[in-house]
Amino acid sequence: MSIEAAFIVPHPPLIVPAVGRGEERKIQDTVDSYHEVARRIARIAPDTIVLTSPHATLYRDYFHVSPGTQATGDLYRFHAYDEKMTVPYDQEFSEALSRLAMRRGFPAGTEGEREPELDHGTYIPLHFVNEVYTDYRLVRIGLSGLSPLEHYELGILIAQVTEQLGRKVVFIASGDLSHVLKDDGPYGFEPEGPRFDAEVTAAMDAGDFMRFLTFDEAFCDNAAECGLRSFQIMAGALDGKAVTHELLSYEGPFGVGYGVAAFEVQGEDATRHFGQKLTASLRNESSNLKDREDPYVQLARLAVETYIRTRERAVVPAELPAELMERRAGVFVSIKKHHRLRGCIGTIQPARANIAEEIIDNAISACSRDPRFMVVQPHELPDLVYSVDVLGEPEPVGTLDELDVHRYGVIVSGSGGRRGLLLPDLEGVDTVEEQVDIARRKADISEGELIELERFEVVRHP
Image 1 (spheres, rainbow, N blue to C red):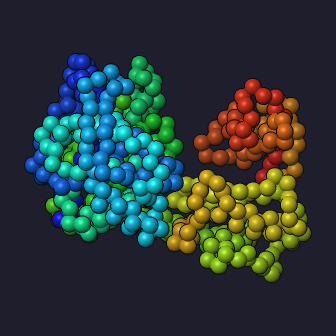
Image 2 (cartoon, rainbow, N blue to C red):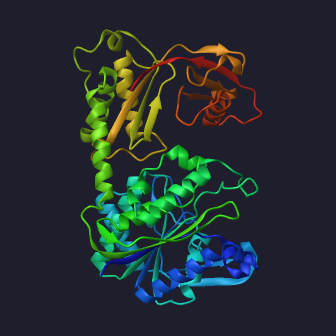
């Protein structure tokens, strides 16, 4: 048995008549496509439905798989007081997926349940399925803040468990598209919204799963998209499979994009291992950057690779440039993986004998002690890219006019010794006001509190 088909569906509560009270007729194409998806699922008669939802339990660095034997949900908060369902879970599947992830060192499992009730991203698709087919068990999975490739890899693990258990499976990727399509919509308008919807629905229609993995992150944030990571997991679940591809409908009359697409498995296709292709491309890019690293970045890489492989502190190499050995300065070491931050730790003022020692200590901290991330694993080392920022002396400033988000970093100080720092020229930080606000929040300084500002320049070693 295997994954037989996959479907992308939106989850607007008003599509359920008890919620929409006639408004659902304004997205009739979506309603009709949903009924078609339900009929196809009934025809397949799966043992298990694997459903990914943006509104299930979500962690930044972990995929949550709902545990237990069943779950109940309702649409009470949407004033549909008679809408309620209980669905059985495929507990064996969920536990097998959790075990496989643990063996692979992959961050997914059944720990940390926070919302046991069915979320509306799960409820809405199952409302339509249950009208025509109920003889299934559910596996409900949340998304994460991890990279597109890690979402894709989770899909591969789901496919492997499907084969291992001999299940007939249908995959449902629940997710709306952009939420910023119209000025009079609930979230307003951004030009990236319609562009995102046009590009992602074109990818659905063409079966171009690589496109799901390669959207620019800032573009997606500006488009306020909802479901892309769900689609990425689905793509991984169909890794290496020949599939039909149909965009059944697309609508956005309320300012939110609703796409429905269907993919039915036709066999194997060795050209559709998109995760492998993207990994190879990114590693080639990383290798090219490694060939151009200067001694500062080489030292950061040496420190991380030595510590992760041996748990030992790297020895300072001989014949480093004089500045590394003779000068003291604050240093920040940043680590990225697949263009996403993987760790960043630094010192505002020098704490070690020289810049070389500062780099080594901060690189070790960045890969193992940044509280925002799990410790770097040995298999990740080929994918990591490093940068080192050497800080100049901070100087006080009196007004925001003395700052420049591209030239200067900023230090925001409040009472009790709280200080927050933000480096200059960071992607997604476009104004001085944003820069100061982020640094303030990093130091847990309240918005109305009196603050002092300092600026500093950096020499960045990419």
